[in-house]
Image (tube, rainbow, N blue to C red; front, side, top):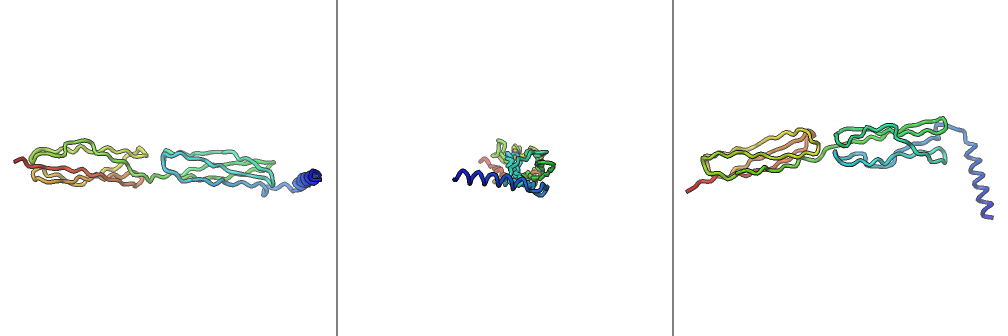
Length: 176
């Protein structure tokens, strides 16, 4: 009895789906949920799109994608589905951002000198995730004629406005 009811339900379902008038409105495409804003250099995982026509599950294809995770910007992925004589597209917008400041390291240098002797600024090493030029501002001065401790601050800003700083301590000593 259960088999007969199941068979009738399947025949009824097939009959009803065949009775539907074909229409582009019945072709539905949507984006699968996903993370669409990522940090430059990270891996983007495309969660794709889904589609259906009435009760039939369809599988959209990627028509085009210009996503470049190594470059800050706004990119798009266009998905397309075609079924019967109908076709639709949907676009995912992917934003690649840079919110990571540069990593700074002091170059080794002689930072304790005798009064009256020259002090040479050894500078810093800068590693930025975008590998683009950065702006370096050096704040502070060392007076080699006056004993004391001096601070030299290196302020680094990358092209996306992320700032970081590091301090070098310079000591001018007086020998007795």
